[in-house]
Length: 80
Image 1 (tube, rainbow, N blue to C red):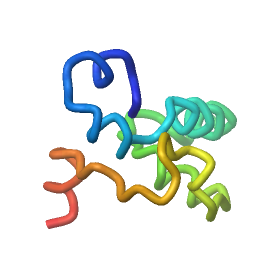
Image 2 (spheres, rainbow, N blue to C red):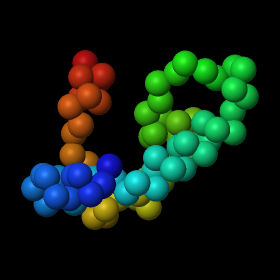
Image 3 (tube, helix red, strand yellow):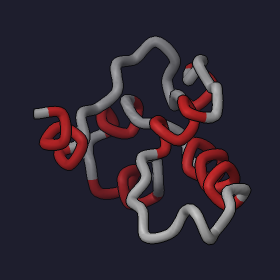
Image 4 (cartoon, helix red, strand yellow):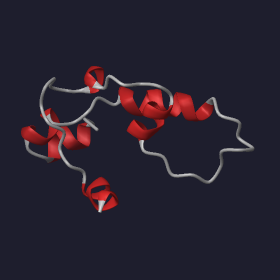
């Protein structure tokens, strides 16, 4: 996510290959709309939440459109 921490502590290439913070806000909105009695104690990944909610176009969240995303270490481990 293109936060100030990324902007000031990492190479610009990583910032440019990130997504805007809005993706987290949009995913959080979908999570908060769920029934809390049925959805508690979970770990969510923003893209998974949004896909489940029907989002298919993630271009709006790209800092630099058409740039491949930087592979997050945590998510890279998750795919194995």
